[in-house]
Image (cartoon, rainbow, N blue to C red; front, side):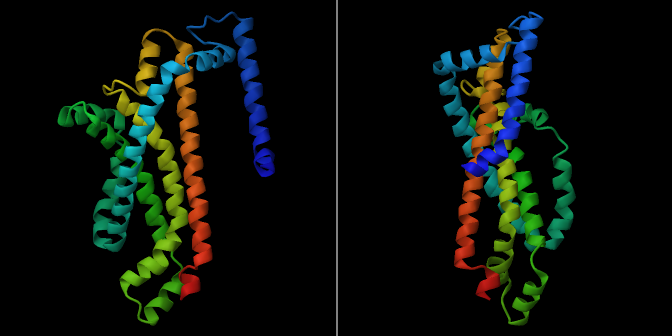
Length: 258
């Protein structure tokens, strides 16, 4: 707790200062609430309007979690296949990079045409957003395997499968978790974008309704909710990362097991 305070008090102080300046500027220049609400007004809306946006939060969490796990599965599977088959990696890696230059918001209408307005196109959107950082992080992790240990395992006759599970996979875990943390934050953004396609519930729907009726304070509440959810996801994956790496350290890696 003390470590968190030592690391967090400076950005917290900057944030409070910025909010104070924002509040003062809006009051001083009499900016209308529909154009730029005061931070105190946004907080009031967040407190009094909780019954309105809570069902939307549940929907977004469900959708983002489903898309995240789909993206995680596809990302790790793609990384393993490309790493184990260098020819495929040479053929598909540039296309993988190229695919990320296509904005998801452009693909979304096509997914609706192909798959309708159900949950499938929404999960596909989140999967497309999440799988890329997971794939790239896992591939980088596999490539950073200790060369000396790799040569040693080959020298003692370890099979490719044993080398992968005893050496390359454990060594890739720190990099993989970096990708998982990035994908976790992206999953919320992907869920909001997918909800713009035509959902009945979700933070994206709440934001759309608020902006169309000039409820700017609710738009800011939606933005804060997105940020909070992203931070929670990031913190959750960080906790899992610490637990897994701690277990790996206690159980011994290929370094220790060999």
